[in-house]
Each structure stands twice: as structure tokens, then as C-alpha cells.
Image (cartoon, rainbow, N blue to C red; front, side, top):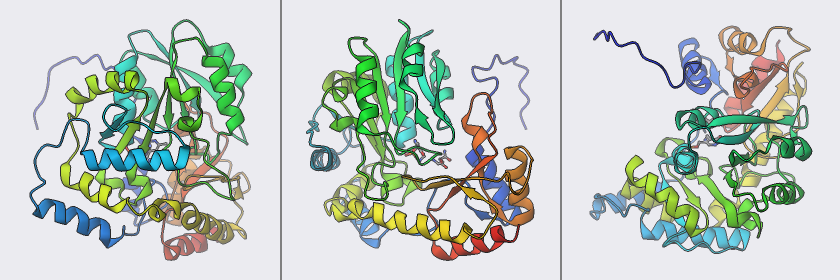
Length: 385
Ligand code: PMP
Ligand code: GLN
């Protein structure tokens, strides 16, 4: 141990360890089924590994271009064009990142100056607010209105000031599974028109939308796309959260600013995995079938919980299912999540972790990106309480 005598004035004084790490650690310690942190407990397809290994063996192991390997940027451009009808130029409008988390952080660092305001919707994915604060910005919270978790655009409009630099949106939404509709994007376009506000759209679950819904990408919105950066993650799409590879697309003027920071942040992302993904994603069915794949898991898990005392909220996208537990316990959600992990053997995430003021509606989040055997084993335990 090395003791430091420094009196540290923390930039993130109220931030502890992320709830995902805390709950995964507790799940491991207790031997609980981990339906807390969002990652699949099944393998990606061998073709992805074969393509990556082939890239390594053929000598593609040195630094790739700062912006990402050309094959992968081209594949991303084609995918986005096919899905959303807009062509981003791989040369100056697409950058490969070390996961969505880095893309979001770098985007904030590129545009937010000290004292600038960034509007986020609560409940908000846990990295947004610490990232805003690290770069000297101030998070301003709009609300996704419980229990539908829809934005109230009049309320958002009232939060816009001359200091508003960015607005972060996330659809399909983590943790709630709600979706933004085209009408929401119209409202967002209207309130950011002629303002200089940059929209940062976190679309890591873009392929996981259910019941025939279409993902309303900001990229597909002709007006919004001109002032937006859109972020996605291969971790979610190809069952490889541990590879930490994602991307950002946007108009050249925005991506140019992004790259100025990106090059001194991570510089670039490991070469062989980028090539493996580029090769693998040539077959579009691999991302197009994701919605049906996860819809089946959602339905399976909801069915498992039907005879339980949990009250399931709607899940329109993502791989998260929210549930109210008021029929079981009056405990605060953090206590309830710990109790469920320790005593019942199923780890979950308390939704208060996604609120700056720790608002507690007695709701927990289950991740259903799991094998049916895992979901069935969890269902059995959860029906007993
Ligand atoms: N945004 C949201 C909404 C997420 O759920 C996650 C978790 N995957 C991320 C960003 C971060 O993605 P990555 O693992 O690619 O950094
Ligand atoms: N995105 C994942 C989730 O919501 C967790 C990622 C992480 O642990 N940082 O569970």
C-alpha cells in the first residue's frame, strides 16, 4: 500500500463506484444469477471470432487510422444508409470509438465548456452526468414521466437557456425500455431550431425494438441530423460487450470537433477486432434479426414472472425489463435489490441509481439478455417470493 498525503479536491465528490460494478460484484460474492449488469450470458457466433483471428494472423496488429479501419467505417456507412436513408461519408463523418461510453464522453468533452448546461432525461444512463461534470458542465434534468417514461417537451423547452450546449437523448431507453417516436424528434427539432444546441443521441439499442415498432433514429430525421451526433455500440448488437467498440456518426463539422478530442483521448481502437466486426457485419441479417431474438427473450421472461408478485412495466425496446415490487416489499429500491441478490439469489439494478436525486418509485431493472435456462431459473426463484 502507498499512502498519499494529498488533500484531493474531487471533481466528482458524490460519485461512488458505478451501480453495475457494485451489483455484479455482489452477485458474484453471493452466487446469485446476475440479471443486474447489462451483458449477455451467451456467446457470439464463431464467424466473428474467426474473422478477428484471421485479421490477427494476417498481420493486422498495428495502429489503425485514428478514425477507425476503412473497412469498418465503410460498413457502418452502408448499414446506416440502408436503415435510416442517410449516407454519412466514412472519410469525415464516421469515427470508430472504444465503446459508446467513450464516444459519449468524448462528444461532451469536445463541445461542453466550463459552465455550459447539458439537458439529460432522468432516469439517465449512469455515465452521462459524471461525464458532463468532469468536463466542467452542469447537468440539467428533464423528466421522463413515470410510469410511461415519456418526455414532456413543454417542460424541456422551459429548461433551455442561452447556456444550453447539448441535449442527450437515448432511445431505446436504458433503463426503462421506452422509445422516442418521430413526433418526439419533431419536438426536439423544433426546440433546438436556430439555437446552436448539439443533440447527442445514444442509440446503442437501435436494433432492439419490439412489437413491430421502427427505431426512430435521429440520423433519419432530416433536420435533427444536421446538428446531431449519433452513437451506437457493437457490444450490444453482436453480444460482445467486453470488446468495447462502438462508433459515432454526424455531419463533418461536428465529427471533426469530435476527432480533435478523440485523437488525444484513445487515439484509436484495436485493429483486429475492428476488421473482424467489419467482415461479420457484411451479413445484415445479423443485426436485423436482433429484434425478434430479444423479443422472444422478453416474452419468455415476462411469462416467467406472470405468476409472481412483481408488476411488470411495458418494455418496447432494449434488453431491460422494469418491475414494481410494491406488492412484495416497502423497502427502498437499493435495499430491495441487495436483499433480492443476497436472499433470493437474483441480482437486479435499483432504478433510483439512474436519478441524480435518487428518486425511488420502488422499481427494479432486470436484464433479459440471458439464456432461457438462466431466465427460467430466475423466474423460479422470483415466483417464490
Ligand atoms: N449507453 C447506454 C444507454 C448503455 O446501456 C450502455 C451500456 N452498454 C452504454 C451507453 C455504453 O456502451 P459501451 O459498452 O459500448 O461503452
Ligand atoms: N450498459 C450496461 C447496463 O446498463 C452496463 C455497462 C457498465 O457496466 N458500465 O447494465
